[in-house]
Structures are given as structure tokens and as C-alpha cells.
Length: 238
Image (cartoon, rainbow, N blue to C red; front, side, top):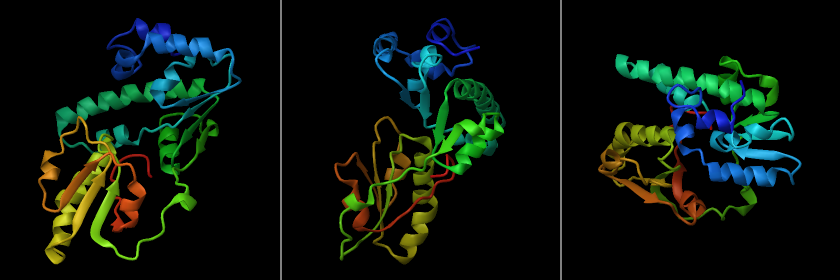
């Protein structure tokens, strides 16, 4: 069956739609979309939550869902060794697969950020002919000139509100940085991006680690650092 606004409103924990999306669905937003949709020729939904507002109209307007990402939940289940957590993550992953397959089937096209993420969708039964790989990127001409003087600093530009980023930062700060500082005691590790609502106490307490929170100009911080580290272990492959 199609995923629709009505379907969401009458379902609870037994819905094929993850509970988070049921709880955060806004009838007011649904009305806004319904009002606007008639005057448009196509629609683009950014994230699953936005896609759910379009499902009622996909038989009358072409639409793209950007961007599918299932790697974190998949890896969370596959890498868990504790039995009770593995069962819980397994149930979440099983339910999420059903949700993703149905949502992908309804949209004309969907995007992912890597071939790895596309392979994940293929594993769970999505039609790969409808999935396009569009990597994340940056407008390189807009980047600042390379600084002559470099600060002895490593940087990770990514909000730890995203689970894959938080795992990466913890891994680097707890397991890798101490080995570097054993040789270079003044080496710093800076993490940019939002931190609200995330417990970073164990990482922030590490010697040489700084969380900036949101910054107006991340480019200059990256350019002024010795290196940008990307210790990602889970996620979609960026």
C-alpha cells in the first residue's frame, strides 16, 4: 500500500513508517504542500520526512527524493555484538527496510551520495534503475587561498548531531589522537558543526580536543589546518 498522510495519522507503533516520522508529521505542513502543489510542474523532497508530504500527490506530479541514506542504521545493526542491542537494532533495521522500499517505489527518482549507499539500497530490494548517485561536493572556486602558515591542528568539519560523525569523532579523539600527541604533544583536534543535544563530554575532556559549534566560516578553519581527517566507520560512504 501507498504511504499517505491518512495512513500516518491513524497508525502507531505498528506502522511501517518509523515512529519518529509519525510523531513529527505536521498536518499544517501537509496543508501547505497541498495548496502549493497545484502550481508546480515537479517536486523535490529533501530527506524522508519531506518526502512523506508528497506521497499523496505522486500520481499527478513527477518527484525526486534527495537523498536516501540507510548506511548508519544498517551498520549499527550489523556491527552490534551485545545481544539485546542487536535485537533492538535488528528490529529497527527490518522495519526501516520496509519503509524505504515503499517510499522509493513511489518516487520517480531518488538520489544517494555514493555507490556504496546505492548498493545498500539494492541489497534491500530497491529498483536501482531509479537511483542516481550524486556525490556531495563543494564549490572550489569559492574556497579561500591556501594559507602559508599552518596551525598544528587537525580538523573534522561535521556536526556530531549526525550519528556517523559522532562515531568518527569519538574514534579519532579516543583511539588515534593520543598516539599522535605522544609524538607531537601540541597537536590539536578541532571539530566544527552543531553539538546541541549531543553528549560530547567524554570527547571534549580529551587533551587537545576543541568543539567550535556552528561557525560562520568553516573554509578558513580547514585551510588553516594541517589536515582534514575523515575517520568515518559507518554511513553512506562520503
